[in-house]
Structures are given as C-alpha cells and as structure tokens.
Image 1 (cartoon, rainbow, N blue to C red):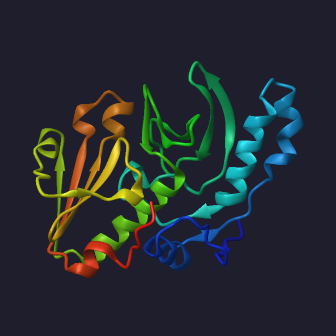
Image 2 (image 1 turned 60 degrees about the vertical axis):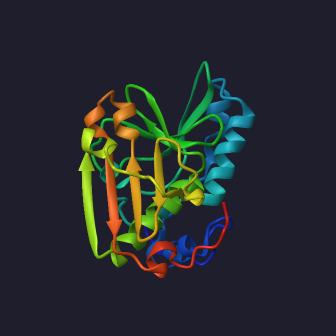
Image 3 (image 1 turned 90 degrees about the horizontal axis):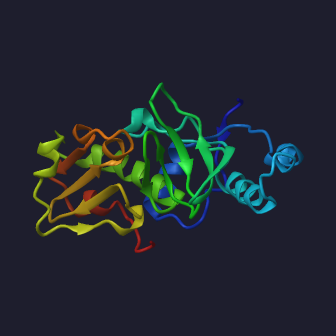
Length: 221
C-alpha cells in the first residue's frame, strides 16, 4: 500500500482533529474511481452517484487512521466501492472492515457515515463527524484520569444531566457529551444495526481539565 504522511489534511475539521490526522494518519495508494466509471455506468449506476464517489475519494481516499475504540477499529482506510440502491437512494462502501465484523461501513444517500448490518445505523451525519469522533476518543483517553465503560442497560443509565452535546462529531447513533470535568461517548450503532440492545456502549472519560475537555478544538461544526 506504500503509506506516506499526510501533507494536505482535509479542511472542515477542528484544530484537534486536524492535528490528530496530521500526526497519526497516513495515506495509502488507492485505485481511482474513474477507472471503474464505464463498468458502473453499464450496470445502471447513475453518473451522479459515481461523481459522489469520486468526490469522496478525492477528499478522503486512502486515509488510514489509528483504530477507533469501537466497531473493531473502523475501516482499514477510507475509500469508496460497491455502489448499491434501495428505496432511500444510493449508497456506497466507505472503506473495508479492519476486522471481521458483521456489517459494512457505508456512506448513506445524504452523506451519513454509518454501518449496515441487519439494519442501517447512521453513526455520524458526515464523514468529518466520524474523523472527529476518532480524534476525540484518542485525545480523551490520553488526558482522562479514569476511563469507565458501561454496556447495555448500564450504558442507558449514564447520567448526562448538565452535559452538552459535542457538536463537531455530528452525532446520530453515536454521540459525544461534554460535562464540567468529563466527556462521555455513547455508541449505539451496533445496537441498531444488529438489533442487539446489549451492543449499546457508553464510555466515560473523567477527571479532565479545560485542555482535556476540548484539546484546542475550535467552534467548527
């Protein structure tokens, strides 16, 4: 794959996420989407869908991040493939699984980043939201004095009174919450995609100071 450092971090990310991608991400070589355009057109994939895939590849293609804390690490690297259609519109693969998980990472008809198992579970409203969440998890794990994980019913019982949503992750099935001295990540994707309520996870990063709570994140999002 010939990985190399990233010199052109995509815009639209917070300073925290840009720093994370620059320091810990690499780019790997990918096959251009345009090489498959004729094959897909012959199979009735609309040109506009192929254009979406090409734009996704131009922005994110080949980005390999450190493993995410859930979903067995997330995609190996981001790259589009396998367009498909249903009543909601056209979807395509966001990147192949890093490990053997029972779902695929997909980009939804409106640009959502999520997982497709028995059901569709949009994790974040945008790809940027996914990248922000991985960056925030890395940051929080470095600075928290204590990390506590709750599963299933215990996850639902985590008290978020007095917390505010972390806007930059653009959370849907997965959300982040910021309190006075802690961050909470709530992962609901597997519970939805696999019809498995016990798959719901909440991770509490506690004992954070002002830097730990934000990591120089700006107000983007």
